[in-house]
Image: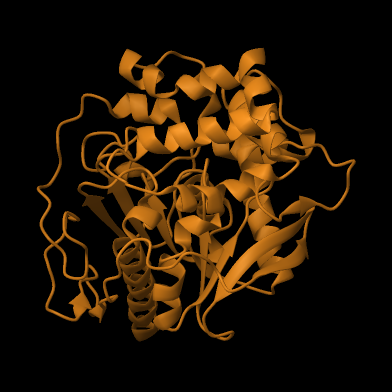
Length: 373
């Protein structure tokens, strides 16, 4: 999940701008922007974007087909919906989740004319390493490079990137290091590029409490739990209940996602990622130069819309103010009330609307630049 230190720095901040209702968002969702006319959604300084029709969470239960493509070090499994020549949106999942976090979002965006791609991250679902000799590492830059390779393999020069949890971090990194590949960004919980140096210092006690599984994974007992299939699935399900306190998912919903946790590299990837973040293990040398760049906490200049799920224990107070300075381009922030960590699956309409609005913000900026030339 997220960078505990970034969250810890934000603890104690006051609340930000009062949130008001947005057209097209489900009951309980809110944003720090004025509501727009029916049938549209506001984009700061730009024309109105279409309102995504509301859909109840859980309307869809699966994707028509999972495809495979060789990309970089991996054979990536991914779902694809929408017209083949539509503008591309890549939706990135987190831990402990999989592509089903976007099972309702993807059809909504496809109906708006987008080509929607939802890849399994390394160690998840049908994504496999091409070589048994490749180290099963999971530095933050390694996962980002996987997605860049995925884009290259599908001949996608630029896309809207949208994510939560590991997906937010991955999208943030690509937007920071390879901004030419990102048309617009939707980042749940804002700026979550891991600062490993800051991770070495203690955070507030309440923050450390939220990270219990990170410390668990640092132990031999935690490793045994992840290596044991039954214990692994029980642990991941328990995390769902803690971080999404109002999401009443059923057994079938969890079991569909839990199939992705049976990947033979799942335990190794998850354990590596969390142990690496807190400095217990060194990263692979091939990623050192990227991690040096990320250690500087680079700013993100692409058009961005950030989302904060209010009931997520990892959402810092302050209505996004704690990370606002990292985003130097066109920007909007929204806070979603009564929503937990798995935002796209709990509030698919709001997430899809954020993607549409971020895309239209980018289009508006491009039009303004063209007018000046």
